[in-house]
Amino acid sequence: MTCASAVISGYVRACTLVLLGMAPVVSQAAPQCQPQTEYEKLYCQIKAKDANVALPSFEDFRRNDPQVQALLLKRPAARWGLAVPSPKVAPEPETSAAPKASAQVTPPATEPPSRKSPAFGNTGLGECTLQGDSIRCPGRQFELVSNQPNRALPNGVLSEENKLGLPSFTGDLKDEVSVRRYLSTAYDRYIVKMLEIGLGGATMSFTRFYNGFWRHQSQGVDYAQRMESTYHYLKQDKKTLAVKARLHSKLPANLDNCSAVNGDILVCDDVATSWVFVRAR
Image (cartoon, rainbow, N blue to C red; front, side):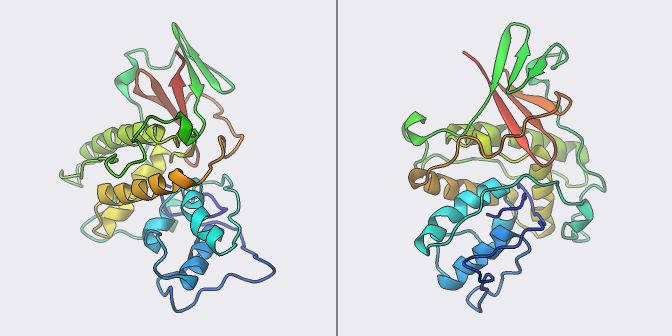
């Protein structure tokens, strides 16, 4: 995880890591490391100290949002007395910066449009208003979600038995409508499962989720399996690490890029940042 914004999800940032006046060390113990961000440098520094540390592969790590990267790094960094910078919100990198896809897997040339879900009803959010950290709609109100302490979570949600459970994509990658339908459904489940483990304030945007899928497909990697691995590490760290309720103070500017996961959950994003709102009871 790094000080720069990433993701769900490869990210290029302009941060420079300085620890005790020393530049990060990347030794031969971590030959796969080619860090570009502050968190990636810290990842490589930790791997150089302990190649067997419980962290995902470098490629899997760099595809996560900075908030998730920070969570993954916090415990191994503390073991070596290394500081983990707070995540910063940064613009999404240009699409051209992403790894080129293979000839067999070619993602769409443009960024995905904002996700629109019919789950909220035929009227959508047209009658709703954004009021700071609340969304008010006729007959119901939604409040911005914060990350939750473990004592507020249901029993068993951090256990090994609780899986993210995204299905693997089995359709035609050239059928963009089919891919978007799959990713929209998978994203809905991802949001629900992140709320379940108390990390509703550290979710990736749909754009990053979408781009992460194509990056993994271009490398022949099953995105659902990679996401399951990340969910596993997040649960492990959530058991022992405290997480800030709010990782930043930024709020959505409007409801233009908001959609419903279901009747109780709304998600807004500005490409780089995601906000989850849950219906007030």
